[in-house]
Length: 145
Image (tube, rainbow, N blue to C red; front, side, top):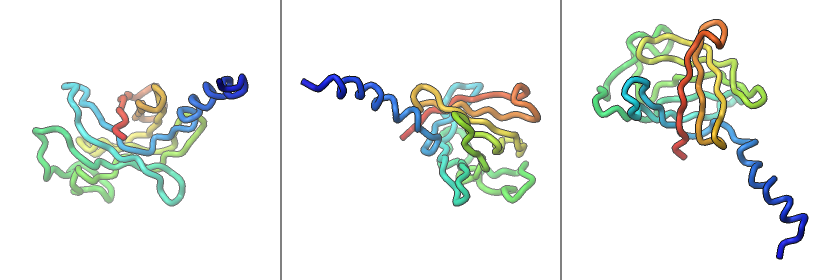
């Protein structure tokens, strides 16, 4: 039978992974209108320690695999959507990641971005906004790995 000390430590140890979880990994996005899977996004660490994210696979069966970011106005202009970096410069700030930007590849617009984990790190709430966070919208992404 485990000691009282071991029994007390077990719940704390089980909770630790979610407290240190990060958005690094692969996430499935869901289309707001159809509720169907839209894309897989890989979030990764840059050499400067910030987080970036790119579309690694378009899941929409009706999407054109040759579709490009025609509306982008920066170095991503005319790049293929699959492989496109859509998140950059995200920095940890307590339990959230912010100070970065997210690109909407449909219209080429850049928005300020905040991300936070929910459900023990299985969900990522991504909020894009202009100006203040109240003037934006959120999506929930689902961890794939």
